[in-house]
Length: 167
Image 1 (spheres, one colour):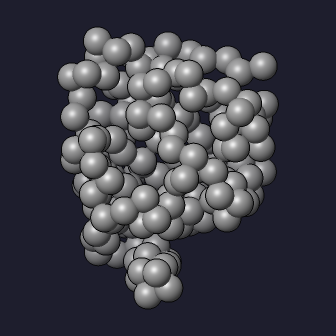
Image 2 (cartoon, rainbow, N blue to C red):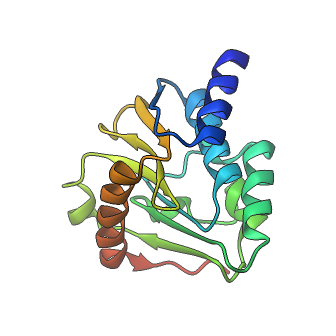
């Protein structure tokens, strides 16, 4: 796993568009952590359940918290299963209540038509799961074309989402 972590860290710091394959939840966690670490303005996540094995470990929470420390940064989380958006989830328990973080739920009639999941950062970096039923994905930093396309799709889905307020 150390070799994979080093490959991801190199790709993230170089931001040259080189794709990195993701084949497991552990890979997804490492990639999500690196996306938060290298984000400069925005992090957008479209997922089914905000998997706690990916978004719950301390290392990713530390990176997300550091990213959100700047009021000029933003995180938008769009989920298919709104029940996961509760203070019982470690990501939400630690980071909820910040003005630069928003949550939305994608209605099921729309979500069932969407076959993928994605995380888009700064309009030039991403993790893309072509089949949302699997953990296999590709990630890249510095791929403005690919990330730009995903950003436009995410924005369209975000507009269809229903705001969720966690108190």
